[in-house]
Image 1 (cartoon, rainbow, N blue to C red):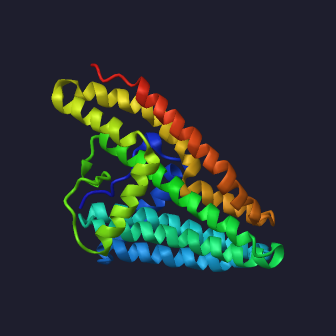
Image 2: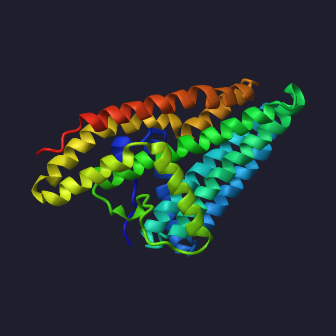
Image 3: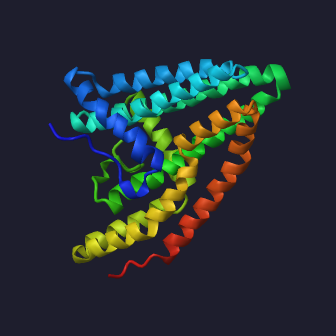
Amino acid sequence: MSEPVRRAVEIETPSNLYVIHPLSAWIVPYFARAKIIPNQVSLAGMGCGIAAGIAYHFYPHTWCVFLGFALMFAWHVLDGADGQLARLTNTYSEFGKVIDGICDYVTFTAVYVGLALTLATIHGGWVWYLVIAAGLSHALQSAAFELQRQYYNVYGLGRTPSALPDLDAPARKGTAAWLNNIYTRAQLLIGGEAAPFHQKLAAAMAAHPETADTLRARYCATFAPAIRRWALLSSNARTIGIFLCAVAGAPLLFFLLEFLILNAVLGALLADQRHRYEAFSFKA
């Protein structure tokens, strides 16, 4: 049995690289020996996320904030473990990808709702409009962030392109396929020029295989620094942001930051990617 596969070091956040993923990698072999499947790990992580939402509901009690943060940290570790376990046991599936995504959104939905229920009693019902706007912003930002990482894994690291978003793939039936199609459309819509650029890159590599390594190296040098900046939109950053605002007694500030600041960050990151696409040379 091989070691769990980790993500690309050059685009990882320090919290993933030095804390979360090592812990995930440590527990994965135990899960494999116990015959625990990746979807069970995903659901256990979601349970931690829902419990975190309950804890954050009582954020005026400082110990509940620390409990909520600990539970979200546990979710992060399990969220990293399910993918590693799937690769280790060769049980990766589209359904598992959808389940993993749903568990991620359920976790943050639980936390947002838990906070909003208390905030509404303090500030009034208008808080729900802000929380919903922040939640929708979160979904779009996360879709764009994940798209950049997916493309880098394929074109920077040479991994299989089967996991890339593809609306031209043969239609499949079932709820998982339907949900995956919706998510794919959202990713490609918010990603802007990402799909056309990578199609052109794939065509260049296929037409001139002798230049593929040169183009791949240039791609890594061009886009790895940019993708590291996208970590501002990562789940890790949100987990820390929620904790800091809640422990300061001002979780409303987090939702304002999510809606106003992180949307502005998304716009700036997309503009930066567009400039990098335009400047990239496809010549060896």
